[in-house]
Image (cartoon, rainbow, N blue to C red):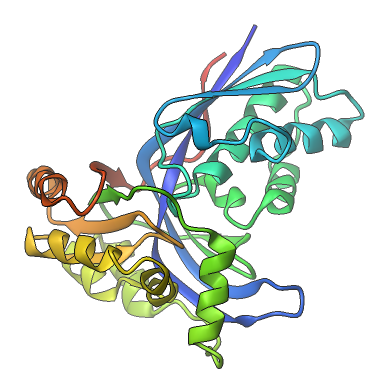
Length: 297
C-alpha cells in the first residue's frame, strides 16, 4: 500500500516585509497564489524513515532528516505516539531553492500522505499547526488556492479569485539562500514599514483582472535578491521585452515570475526567455491551483 499526494508551487503576488522581530523572523503581508507546477510525494510503509528523490535538480535535495518531508513525518508520528516508519519518495517538478516553496510543498505533501497511510485521521486544524511548525510557507502549500499570510506568513486568510491567471517562470542556475536574502533586505531596508496588502491587488484577484494585477505586483525582497544576484535583472528585462505584463522575483528568488495575458502569450514569452540565454529554462503555469491532494489511495 502507498499514498501519493500532489502539491503545488506558489508565487507571491505581494510580499510585504516588515522589520526583523526579536525571534529573527519578519512580519509579513504575503499574498500567495498556488500555481500549476507540482511535486508528488509518495508514502510507503518501511522499516524506518527514508527519503528518496527524482526529477530536475534532485541531487540538490537533502535526503536526511533536514528535509521538510522527513520532518513532517516525524512530527506527525510524534503527535500520535507512533514510529515514523515510512519511505517518502519525492518526484520533483517545482524548482529547487527557487523561491517557489518546493521544500514547503514536500513537507505538506508528506504530512497529508503519512496521515492517510497511517490512518491517523488528524484534524485539518492540527495539520495546519504541524505545517506552521515546519515552516512559514508550509501551511499555504497544504491549502493552496489564494491566501493572505500574516505573522511570519503562517496565519492564513483565504482570498477569492475571480478567474485564471497565466504565468511564465524563468528558472535560474543555482539557488539563493532565503536567510541570506532576508539579511540583505535588513541591510538595504533598516527601517522597513509595517507590511500591508494593497486593496487594489486584492480587488484584482477577486475580479480576475489580469491588467490590474499586473499593476499591483510587488516583492519587497526583490532589491535584496537583485543585490545578491544582479544577473536576474537581465532575466526580468528579457521577459518584459518579450511581452509580459509584469515581472518580479518569486519570493526570495532566484526564480523570476512573469504575468502574461493568456496561454498563447505564455508560450511566446517562455520561448523568448529560453532563447535569451538569461535563464536555464522557462515554465508556463496557471493559477490558482488546488492545495495538497491525494491522487492515489
